[in-house]
Length: 97
Ligand SMILES: [Zn+2]
Image 1 (cartoon, helix red, strand yellow):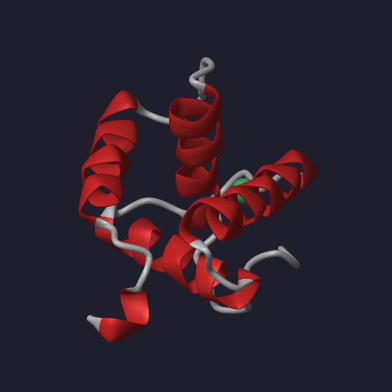
Image 2 (cartoon, rainbow, N blue to C red):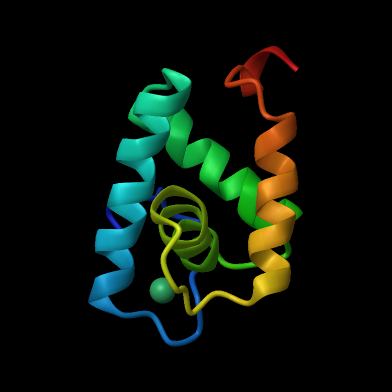
């Protein structure tokens, strides 16, 4: 169970403990960057996952390593690019849309 993402979230097929650490870090960075509550950040992570057609784990990985740290990521480059496009559109007020 991924405690940093709510139940019902699509997890990857090879889920590892380290994914949970990455997901927690993604939520932390999102709360800072976008002034979201952690519940809002988790909701947004799920929305990005569904819009990227990826698991929440992959999107968290793409966000933390591909976007935030700019470090090598295990996430497919196509997913990182899709996430980057979504981030450019994202205003931080998902609920208002
Ligand atoms: Zn996972």
